[in-house]
Image 1 (cartoon, helix red, strand yellow):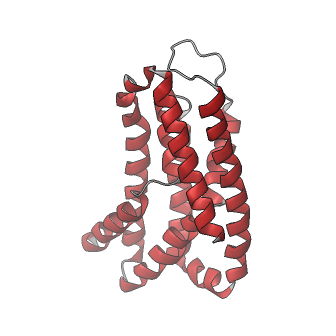
Image 2 (cartoon, rainbow, N blue to C red):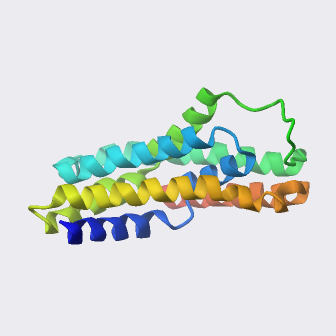
Length: 199
């Protein structure tokens, strides 16, 4: 049981560590200290649902209906292109800085909708969690539940660590130039993922 949980944790962490749309969004919200707990919980719960679905056999259903992933691919690419363009626009037009008295904090629902879009409209998320982790879990026929719990724990630990550790970078982001660089980098990440989806 412990062996399965450790392998699940290691696999879950290795898949989530590379910088992606979700991670970039959580990092920025952590830097701004806006709805950090809700965003981290949303990402972790989404991963938990997808990992559980993969382990319970949904991966086979996805493989039987590849058109589902094709639809998600184009929806996701469109969403990422628009979201990336917004970051390029912010880098070009606006001068952001971290200030204690920010009055233009977006509503929780708006931020959660963006977070859910970045998660559920990205086919890479399905391939990593549902298909890949679901397939690997079949190597542990009697302890699949512990494998899933290990992978879910990795997701939970990663997102909350990223969201709350981001505040230690705040001294750097007192300067508007740092925000411009971050917005350009996030825009590049979003567009590179979108291009990889449709190419």
